[in-house]
Length: 140
Image (tube, rainbow, N blue to C red):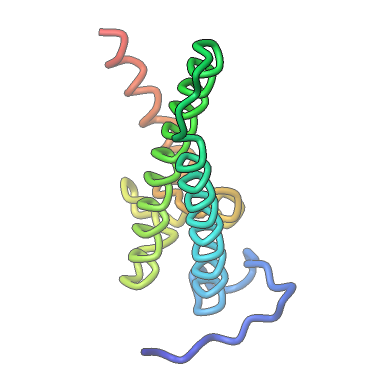
């Protein structure tokens, strides 16, 4: 296990320091781990809520409403599960030294983009090209 990198509490990655240095990697690793923990905590709350609402509801309208709520909770939980998977993938990229670089072009992803979306795997330009291509193929 490698030593923890010291990170001041108010640290923010800056353009004038070497890209993906130890401090930046530590900053994004902590940000991703905190996000993952928040999602796992929400997921546990969702499970408890679903177990509590699993009781029999005699009124048909109430039962329909509860089923709708449960379906929405399950969709949200599925989205959270996929997000946790993307966070795990980003954490693996930090460990392998691939984090912060576009999987298409190999260019650095802007720090602002990574700060806003730490699971980003493409530069903004590559992402936009990818989405345009997807739209064209979807229309076929």
